[in-house]
Length: 291
Image 1 (cartoon, rainbow, N blue to C red):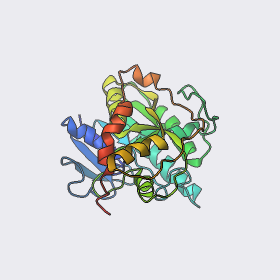
Image 2: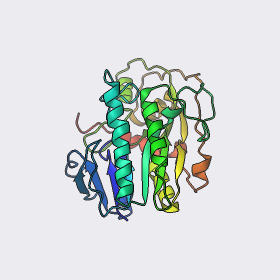
Image 3: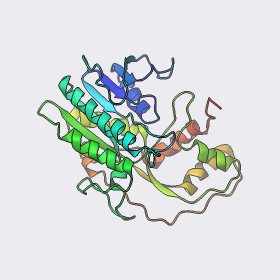
Image 4: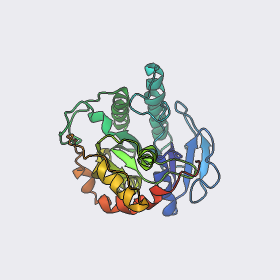
């Protein structure tokens, strides 16, 4: 089997690449430029691709689509002052890619969607895949519409999957900052930290979910989430690891909507939970190599 990945050098896309490489599977990166030398743990192929293109997908078996055009550091609100351009690039571009994948004879495609499709449901709602998408941002709307377009292309030989992922954490690639880098740096410097709770999943567990579904020939929409994490507890782990004396932020009392992952669990998916978070903290403590 040969896998192609878009958005492969991003925080999330990298996990799909590394999961495949660890299994000895050939991976082809679809992107504007080749990845920097040594960015991945093993050599990969490369083919030019930008959102809106119909890339060369010949000889490939499966595709993971993570690429997304947005303002730097912003997903929700990532359209800035150009909502039409944002929609054309991300929705139109994704549909073009989905159609190209089916036409090229790929057997399986995974689209990285988001819990943002549930945006308007009130805090505390149990989020299941049976709920009608109800986004409160253009980002969530584009993800939901792309899901619908992808699933409409399903055939007996073409299995589409949309992974509605929660926040994804884990070590970043060489020279890149992980998602909590700024938060950690602010805490190290003694800056006030606002209370917050959020749902999170490790990128390794997300990639494992995609693998399970691909091996099973599954299709449809799947929630992917693991732990409910309070910043108080996250920063307590950092403080312990680095001996930081600053006071922790208070715990958040805000209600959070939990994503139910029963559909994914039925395929044998078991995420790493708090144990994986604790084991990951040492890698997240290392300074960003670009600093």
